[in-house]
Image (cartoon, rainbow, N blue to C red; front, top):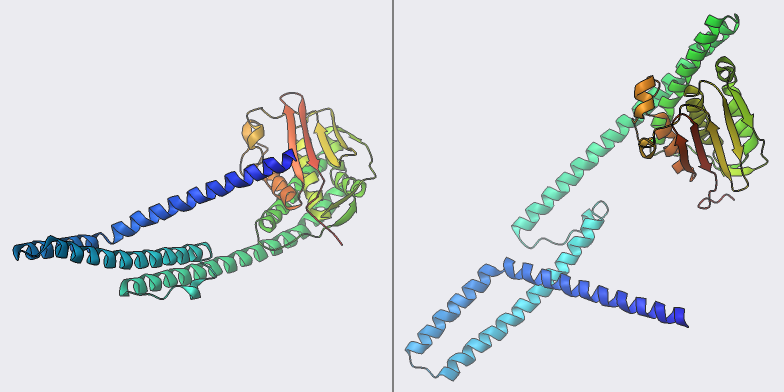
Length: 355
């Protein structure tokens, strides 16, 4: 009962607030209309004064003069009211058009003056030019994405050949070259992901996947990096099944793992998932400065670590956050300088449904 009373009071308060806003809007419109018609009002008052003066000179009865003035005032008030209502209606029409300008260009109100007609023609010309520029931009962007997509796929072939050549000799020099080649391959893939994530096309396939399989396949790519830097991996296997896109979740884990390996000189990297569908990736690296944490997902932000160690592009975590948002996953981080970082990926996707 008490909840019902509270809801009733809230509804009453909302109605009062809406009524107040309505009255205030009408007052503003009234003052704007008066200002717009100020010349007409001044002319009417001027001629009324002239007629009143002339009638007075002829010694007409005051009642007759006042009656004439009152009659004119009533007629003017009626005309003023009708014009004000039309003014309000046309204002409402323009507000609706302004909110849906791209789909209501053919429903513009009929122009009543030459000036209105000219303004409508200017608006239509601007919209047409804007549409033409937008179409041109979209076509150029599509061509650019197609070009970089083709380039990425073509560049992967010589990279694969170079990997095969380097694997033929297990020397320290070749292992170092293989590590740098792996970084190049990651940057190439990052270019493609950047364009795909910032395009309007849908590149997602949501299904239920075995999280353990995704993690193992991703970790396998970094096996040589773990060995080269003598970093141990602690991975607690999981039987969780998640609703996600396998390719993009793998990309997110890859970027976090890449950063963890990059900024960890010794120690271990731990990967585990709990019963709350939260995947955590922690390292014993150099950590992230407290003042940098709120900005690490911004595009181009490298922070103290990036400037000091010259190892960051400022794109990896930006793309990671963007991909996580597309998947409806939440990503967060905890870190302490000199102790390491922990990245959390909340894999719950309550907003998504799969048949």
